[in-house]
Image 1 (tube, rainbow, N blue to C red):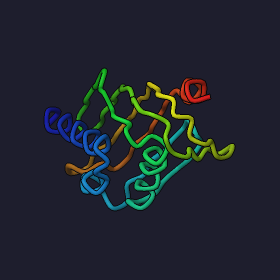
Image 2 (image 1 turned 180 degrees about the horizontal axis):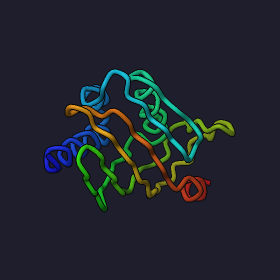
Image 3 (image 1 turned 45 degrees about the vertical axis):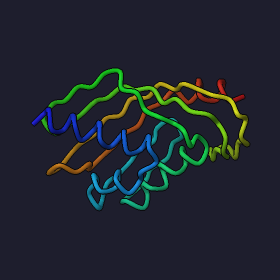
Image 4 (image 1 turned 180 degrees about the vertical axis):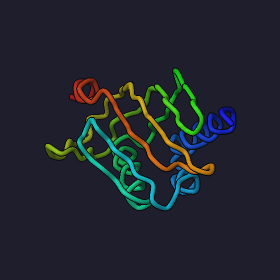
Length: 137
């Protein structure tokens, strides 16, 4: 079971990196929930998850995920990764809009996922927002 869930995580992040959002959503339950702790935001359902993905990809269209560590325990996954991208679009934050700077960045993040019947049910995203902000300022 852990190998198949590991492959699901890789497929999900690969589709995100390639801007294939519909493929990401195919891997999710209809009532998927996303908690983005660095920005204090919550997203519900596939429409909410789409908003979460588009928020990053509109600011960093070339952002690609590179896995560093992944731990699988039954249907739960902890994954550490870097997101590499260029700030070429507007970044929406709770504090306001940040205009594109053209700067590249590498941001470290961890996600804790819960899978149900081969579909992503819950995602908790923790990322180094301070480093992200410093790199694009």
